[in-house]
Image (tube, rainbow, N blue to C red):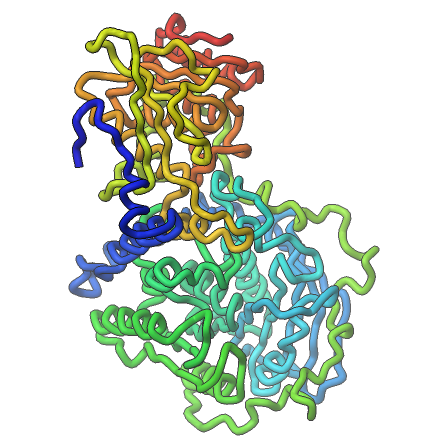
Length: 617
């Protein structure tokens, strides 16, 4: 839609009159985007060879969206056994920890046949959101470890970073307000995937394990972690995730994000059909396990996912390697679910097709795990927790971020071209094919000559769109108030709109940049932009993507995206001073920019030969 210069854009007023609240408008727009992403599944893949050509780049994109690209260094695991439990006949349990990276401790229980002759197939068991307290939630599924070890498997059950013995939250954007996770490109899903990769390294170091027969399973959050590791690492030779993945139609269109914390999601920078994640497992044996009355992984979405996967496996002539099992009931682990999982691994790792008759053998008469949880604790006392642990702050350090000095290592034009390219991937400005809703644009009367270029005054999304120029923007020629999308209800938790944006590869702030870029591009000549605080940074990014924006003024600019605005993975590319520097040679004025970080902006303008175009007051 192209609008004549000077037209009043009251899109939100029109939309509200027709469709209701800003929440409903934005929800409808995001739902349409989800449908676009999932209209087709790998449409260019006609044969297995087609998919194999795509696989390396898909794997790179996948790891990048988890915050794991470049692949981190595999540092020494420093695995330590802190105790054993030998009370169960035919089973030995080792209580252990290892470091997936220095100071990032993973606590686990290793279930071994006793005596151990081996080598045995091994199962990597990922944990859902059980409440194990100080013992770690690994202790709540000891029945699975007992069954596997009793039947000739090694089973490693490991804690997640949220509900383990040393903890960090999974709920940063759900209810803790750590929106800088978006800018860092940090998701706890990435940590859980990396811990699982290193857990496989540990299993392969054990003489009791056959490294060619390692499988993965887990329910709920553990089901999601099973997807993450199975898609990331083909050392997982067979996988049986339980209630761990839905699709965008559910997560966005039906508000499914509300039922899940952040460990269930990656940042969809590359705008994937969500089932592509599971597609990376093809053609390895895959059992998709669900429950018919599960309200957070509903059957319509499960059926869409398995149907897509069956078509992909058929390209390999391996349709018999993918299957779905559905249990009657709500979100839980029942006898028939256990039986299906155990029989699946028996078939693929042992060639044993017999029915499992003792699926509940690890439970006591009360239906609960029969091993006392405190017996499985790795760190017996709080004083045993290592002083060098980084678990509690891993979200601050996990993702490799851009270093400010890197911006000064290339000739300016090469630096700028690379930055704009990478930012476009991250924040997706040019990928949005639909007009962003809830955008308001209001030209105000001016004594300036009609031919002069307008000045867009960028407002925060919750500012009133009145008839007065803000005090900080007085005296501008042809002032036009501009406001990007916002004004929806911010219920914390679950922060529905903001979190739905992230699984679609965008943020509310990137939508605001897109809206302003579009509005500027509709000007017949050019325009200037001015904004205060985070709004001013959004104006600057818009100028990177719109040739019609000729100058930028920012009052009280924040010095880092850690404090906002929040753009997916932007800190893996640059921080605010570098982005501002890339505006050169466009005139840039910073007012009240006292932070030394803006010295880097000045240096980039100097390197561009445009030092005179940069004003800092």
